[in-house]
Image 1: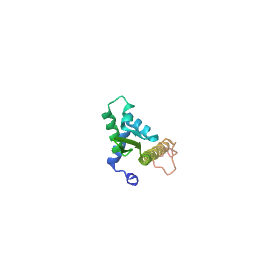
Image 2: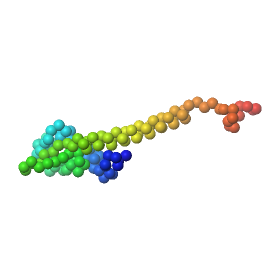
Image 3: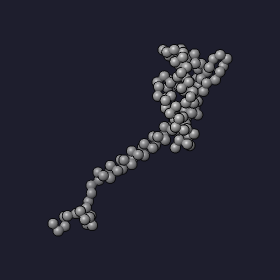
Image 4: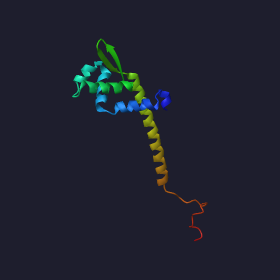
Length: 129
């Protein structure tokens, strides 16, 4: 499953770690539509510039954003390709779990179905009692 997406376990861990924080998800959301400087992003949050830089670094390590130099500024934007790969990974997990739940539902339905003893059933003691 993972090989087709080109994501190894470490890349998947970085991806979920990056998406596991509300500030990083917000930075990603903002950079989906516009390119921002790290300074502009930092001004949007009630935290230090260094803290925002660390969040950006986590997103960059997960390849969810791309950072480029423009003079003395560092500009960031979301990487739609990696976001699409992350979505495909989540879609695959969803399909996997839905198929498991469907199989479990089928087993439970089979178990709950009324059973009629057959005439060949050795446990049927209704004859000759």
